[in-house]
Length: 527
Image (cartoon, rainbow, N blue to C red; front, side, top):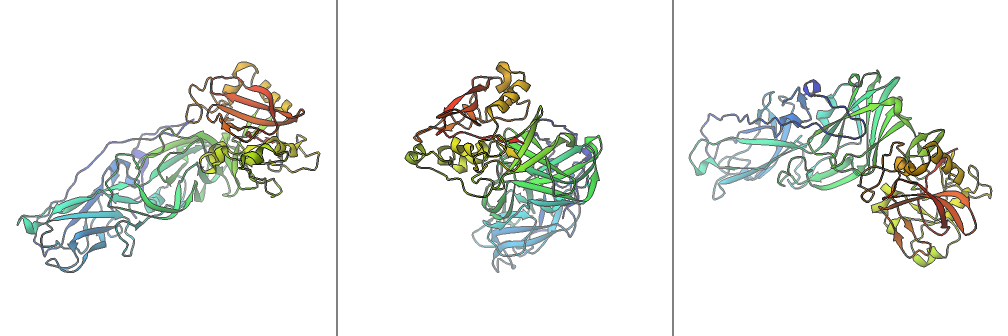
């Protein structure tokens, strides 16, 4: 693998409520001269470097280094040949090895200039070389979700996770010009993104987990390396990704002892670039098995390819999480003496494992007097991860007591949690001072999910209320996604039941009633 990273030369940036990136603009064009006259029977000389040395994931200070005999690249060319005088076959995944250690290097391997009418030779390359004869359009690539770091502050593991694709280059064959040929000089571009977690606190750190809404890692896949280099920061297009994961875990072989200074404990993670929505979870574990989490708003604009993001983490602010019976993980937030789930419920089962009916038919929904759920617009792929499910109140009615179902019904909340009563919602409002600002203290900030202007939203509680909308009581329509967020209480009247809602154009929280056949969101409260 390439030389390990030393980030000591990179200025620090401490982040508290969002994730941002450090950008550098150091480029190098250290092309090696080729002193030998070339002809069609001579070996093609190859050299390579990082297209942007400052954002390379394997650095010494701010300088990129290839490692002699260790670093290998794979090269493709339809016009170049495996034998002299244009003989043999075209070049498919030829193995070339770094000939020296340095910021740029010549590479040794076997490849000859072709002859005939094809005077221009186009070359494609990638790092690290993988044996096999795969086409240049389906080069294997993977990024594991389970990563291992030897100790706090070490970044030796990052080089092994790095994957780079060269900008395609076309060179004129020296046979057509009778001139001294330029060597094939390749510049490599990163596929992935690096997160540097700077963690302070007390106790022991064994592992760090990062969870988002979209793909962060994948166990297998392919990439077409003949594609043009994307714009700066824009991700490459993958031909395929399999075994995708929305979380990555870095485990420390030697656990770290946390201190009161962020810079003392650094953990490095390589992730797939792209946009995450809603809140991201940062997990902290002292044993690799039990976790506490910090919820942070996803970075606006997403994680850009080839950049490093420095994330400041105070372990003292991490709280426990809870899993539902489906295996969905929820952050938790303490507000006063209450502990709430940090996102809307999305379980499809009661906590005894029995199924909650997923009712998509409009007429059937309107006729219900028993529990059911659905996704907004019956579209789980678009709405589940962010907004959770919509439940009618008959599902909540199985939690008729605030803690233990008095009617022998089943609970949709995890064991040890319950649907809040109307009075428990009032306790929350009272703790936040009552009045017209309570909703703003609970709402997610910005307009990624809330319709503008999202009046008064501060999310100072990290409750992160979202506008999941509703399904109308007759089942005929879904309404108000983006503009209104509703949550049931477990307190009924006759044909109605109490709920709380927040609106895009108000900072208040509304206490009112809905027909029990409506489908709205649920937040669970710890017993």
